[in-house]
Length: 426
Image (cartoon, rainbow, N blue to C red; front, side, top):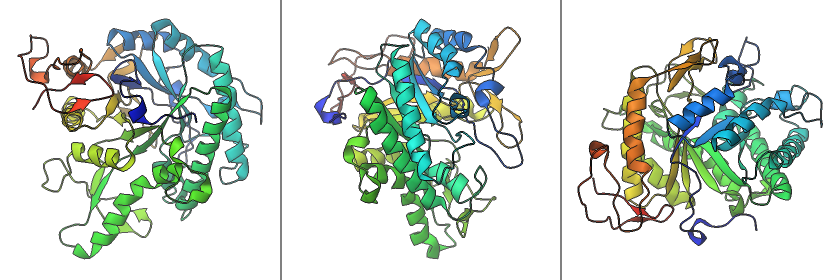
């Protein structure tokens, strides 16, 4: 068996640093626009070395990256990974650990995503990349076979906002993506037996509006649908897809300010003017509870694979997520890391607007990027909390005391097995 249960490796650290930086890498077709290539749009492909130096200087030893499958496999079965080479070399030079997305909403034009060929193609391409990667690095690979299966299947198969712009085929697409992910894992394991996999999806909270109590069963059913892809991969749902518990390795949870809302679906399409639940609302569910539910359901290590906000909300949102993550860890939830996503400002999917949602801005002609200082300061404070992995029996600094000598605190009763440290009480 390739996968080992978490409890059998209680002190293994999966990631080099707790905090990671994620480079936006979407390559899909939005409606009425050419194919996106946000790696190129942010000039990350041109300035990979400088970008990785910036990560290192900020103490970020982990990165999320995405292969651009449409560039890798322009002709069926012929693979050219030269587009990934600058990133691999930059990561190697800086000692950065990379989590690779194989399919981040985009795939080659010659493949029909609804056909069996898509399943076979993802597996062949994944195995080819794993084999190529082994010649470039001596580190075991970390992969996301298909990014955000739940969101992907909704946006491309139900809501019809990204290619192939299908309506009413979301569940069908979800099963297709799960089959492809499972095949990719088996194919990669055949050439890289120690490969690890992160299954990334948003975690959400959806409830009925107070004035519509009749919507409660529908709202709860919709909320529970967030678990479908993970349940399929584990074989708990639709076992005919080939799922098994061995495939659920690391759970990647994406969480943004818009991940909670009042149920107001119109058929299968979410109404454009959906009503978000803000953090000040009494119905807002604390992130710590969502993490606890996720861990209780799968008992796997958790990676907060994406989190971030726009404009002046960036630092405050990051602070909230860190506070809640610390609380969840105190309660025994094995959160292994957190990825600031995106790490570079980028053009918006639908309108190309300059999205100010990252730590660094657009690059100038020499590859320099202006840093967003409020978020950088907040990151530095929380690095002092999460990155100080002490010997058993020592404490972890609190954010308020970061930078100064932390007071002596008694050890928490909850030992976090993945890291060999104890968290202080809040």
